[in-house]
Length: 181
Image (cartoon, rainbow, N blue to C red):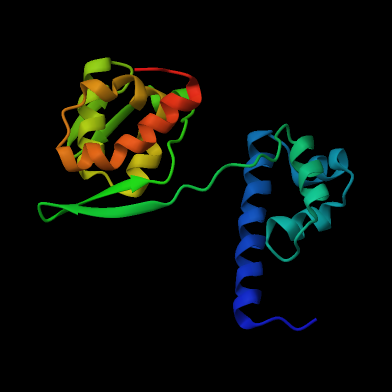
């Protein structure tokens, strides 16, 4: 089967990304290639080819290798961002709210030369206000937890245009959780 250069590039991208995933899982499990290959029922040379993006496993094989390393494949919703402009400044709004791992949601973050302890409610309120007004997509993904945002929403001092853009996400999350205001 002949594929276009674009299809070949796309396949190569995902092969490398999958290889990185296998390496990360293997290292996190403190396993070498030989051990992970043995436990997952594949050969070391095949696992090496997967890790280096030279081959792509089937979904079943990928799941088996990750399972052997103590991980599982999971479906995660893609989050896209819309850029909006208010008073000449760009701010970003995600397509959905994301839950963060506890360590990230309640960790310490440095934003614009200030340090915020997200476990402290007042510091989190200040950080979220800054992030919603000025944060880029990656900062929003890394530091804004959907549940904690909803919980603080009514206390955030946001410009009306930014509040209006984020409000549907907050209301959707409240509705899904059965929270009535």
